[in-house]
Image 1 (tube, rainbow, N blue to C red):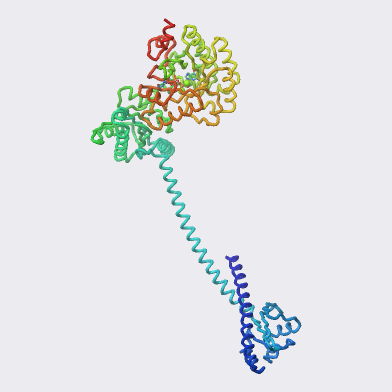
Image 2 (cartoon, rainbow, N blue to C red):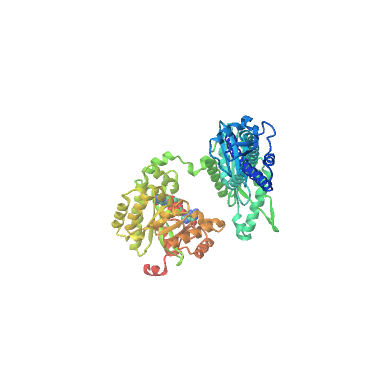
Length: 619
Ligand code: C2E
Ligand code: MG
Ligand code: MG
């Protein structure tokens, strides 16, 4: 404000001095013109003096003076008595006079503004002197500066208000946008219920913040036969059913901590409970409310649900563990004919004692507990098997068959993955060679685990194994997952190049689940892309999955890669994939993974088996 005041004062001062000087010039000129006109009519000097006039009083700052040719003041005679003008008079006597010129002069610390004009046709000059310029300017500028300051303050005030209003409008808008984004990120678009993210964050928060007396019940519910409704009545009716059901759930379970749709026909609920009896009551309430018929476009539909439940803290203390356990309970309930199930650790195949498994896995190879199963890969143009994927099985003496997803992870943790992979490689190549000898020219795909892709000895080992069996390298396909490559892309790329140089085929497994950079993908020496089964299995129910499958097929083809779809579980998916131009299919619809002897039988008997030409040769 001070700076603004100072500058407005300076500006106002300059403006007033300019105006004062302009005034002096004008007033002198006009008076001279008047006197000249008078003089031309021959008036006396007295007349002229009358025109020039007398200062009205001593303090009047503006004075007209009549000067003779020697610059002596001849009128008014008494002027020298005016102290304010006297400095100027003595100054002018000793200085040259600029005619027709307005001047501003500081004499003895006082500012004088004067203007002198000759009176035409006479020896006289008319001088106008303003000795009080400082005072006048000071007063006027203070007034102007005050006004400017006031105006400035008003403008500042108005501007502050405007900016305040604007910024609050902008922040309101940003808040609205943020809320909308947050809503979208935490809610299901179709039903408006919460989504998986909301379920997880709510459950985790509740577990972290509630006291020990309270329990949290997490329920997962899957609709039975929803696929049939979708397939027979169409997706529109399916969507309407989900929406109406969601409305009904919202209405009846206002006391739930969260009601969410996790995708497809899967819903989730979280409730506070104080005892397990209450859990049973709530589960039954959900089942009976879902059971009530729903009327949609003239159809009366019945949506039955199967529920799996887990209770915190006894079954887990994070949303992820609780969801996994509720999921296990739900599938067990479904397998035993629907209804509901509450998680029972005793029945959980995944809660095996990991420590025991770790110890046992170290001896699995020497104890002959590993076995290779083979799952056929079918050429979608001929409909015949062209190769197999070798999938490892572990027969645990006490625990029975342990799924590879579990023991491969353990093998990676305890450094057993390399010996297991080499075992799979030797056994698989040996088996493949036996088939070739028998006239069955299948290719064999082998899965390489993540950390093996960083092992620089791997290419030499594979080359040795191929040489050992005397098998042409193009019959071996190595499947690597996207994540394996992206862990250390530069190093993985180096090893992939060495493997490719051996002449083996490289396949990118479980494609779509990781984050492969397209930049790397372009330079990877891969020959084949396998779309992850999670997209394929549901592609007819989920339009997002169908779009992903189509995009991956197009991407693979544009890079001249073969495309394999895994997880083909029925004819409809097979037909859809054929239409989309997929090259190779693998899945339970054609065949599940099986031991070598069973596969040989299957190859001869199945319509997906060997081509007629090979069959003829074999015969
Ligand atoms: P993967 O390499 O993606 O293998 C395909 C998996 O999908 C196999 O599961 C197979 O049985 C399953 N599958 C095939 N068609 C269908 C279908 O139509 N529906 C369904 N639901 N599943 C289908 P599997 O044998 O349980 O193997 C699971 C994973 O374990 C494999 O996934 C692979 O990553 C790993 N694995 C298996 N054997 C080995 C191995 O020898 N070495 C390594 N490193 N990993 C292995
Ligand atoms: Mg695989
Ligand atoms: Mg796969």
